[in-house]
Length: 373
Ligand code: GDP
Ligand code: ZN
Image (cartoon, helix red, strand yellow):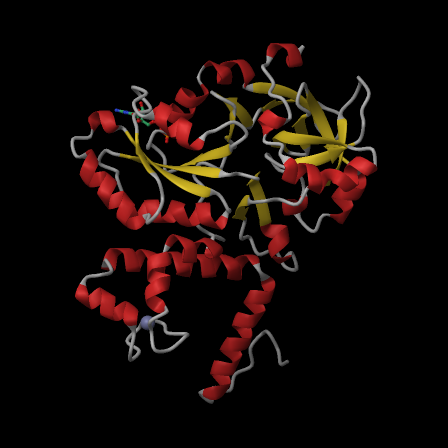
């Protein structure tokens, strides 16, 4: 059976800690058991309960009360399950409040859908995000800033991983450049191919019970890195069988993978190349230096567009702030704002009101399709 073939970590090795235990207390009194979601796939879930893994479905009430897909269990979630017999899938009745979540806003802006409905949680309760860059022709600081923003927005502590040191002859310069756009963030130079630096990376950031993700653009070496970190474990534990909500058997790829010394790696489709849309919360953190400068602007809502007393412009003029970095900041802000407008009908309504006000104020009398109000 599956549970004998795979090496399955205990609840503590899955990241269970006193904080989760206290969040779980009300469910415990209700006779429920804790479990962590290790795979989520089209209405089929797999949960680990420490010594074993179970296929799982969600209770009707949980589905009914969910405001959107973001409220349904995602990989990495801690959930409460009904005590189950030997047969049939476990039933998930509740999702514990998330400490963090990497989200993707689908941004399709379906009428009345709301932001929640458009938002999908790709991974929950992720502690660490390994932001991988390749130290080859593709090394790109602007992209690194993007992924920093995504990590901060998802509530995961970023770690910069400079991969392919084996073919880089200027590692120190690349490291200095990375440190400059990621102030205070640990930077590790590694080779996923030769294994150089991986032990040190794992010792520092992949301790037992830590949940990590690997993010980065295509070609930087994410798959190679994941394979190197997971090693033989991945081959053993790749597929799990699960029942979907209609009772059909499906094969699901396990997405929460135990690695090396007891850390866990979330590896789901779409997560690795997560983009910045919807990451507006992360921009402030990823660009803390710009935010600090902006505190010195004369106007609190300074747009840094030529207003008098603008500290950001002054820093650009003196070379304290790199114009490339400032452009990057601006671009990410615009993208995030656009994603919010697309995903959120209230924001779109607000936008329409602003346009109407502008039309009125310039004396343009036109009937437009949104009517008066
Ligand atoms: P992904 O698209 O980010 O998953 O990247 P892959 O893991 O598929 O790697 C892309 C290419 O980079 C492949 O040809 C890998 O063999 C190569 N690669 C990955 N890691 C290293 C490394 O540490 N050193 C070198 N020289 N090449 C690497
Ligand atoms: Zn300013």
